[in-house]
Image (cartoon, rainbow over all chains, first blue to last red; front, top):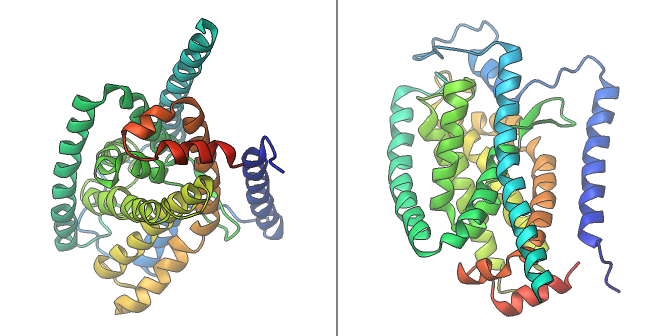
Length: 100
Length: 228
């Protein structure tokens, strides 16, 4: 038997399981701040004394609030492209279906 | 991460990245000239790289990282064109977000823009003529692209970080795999599931583009519509 929205249901279950796993991890250790893996790796490279000499250092690091805004801007740019194209395709499909 | 790869390794990864980018530009030009109707699809696949690589997702291992979104672009346009889109995303992140860095941009292009997409593309090409369903193939290809990206990042750091962990590249590789690749497995599964759903909608809305680009045959499109 073919379920009409089978893939959608599977994806929804995967998303729910993912967030359940993350919530469980958060509840198990409430102090976890979920640092980025690159931050963890940087700490590993720097070592316990943090004394590694970096040949190059970033010339500008955005403040935390601005960083979040810029990441949101990047996500918005991607979402805008996706939305425009899918909207265009759906519109085209409806127009061609209406014309027939 | 700016400054965490030794200068010689930065140069090495740039030398690997540049020919891939040149090849990518050539292929992108060919797509732009030969099939303008494929450009919206390029916009969608590029949009997913922009979107997914900006979302830092927490994982049960207590850290957070982002998906790459490169698998879909690799399936539709191949790994070389994907390297161009990734280079744009990574340049944006390194200039404005101090995420990555200009010295390590070559290494990041190779891991996220070349190695990951190439692995995903390979999985797709190998599996596409088998009896496996299209959603399953897209899932495997996109999840592989994600995981290989972080595996190659681990390798790059193990080989060329300014302060090798324990001084031994093999041990360092295992340590970095534990930091980058193992926690990424769940995110790769999530990415694979989401992108296989997106691919289903592309098949439903504009199958003719996929046929023209040689991604799927008409028979496969009909079969894909029947599956799930």
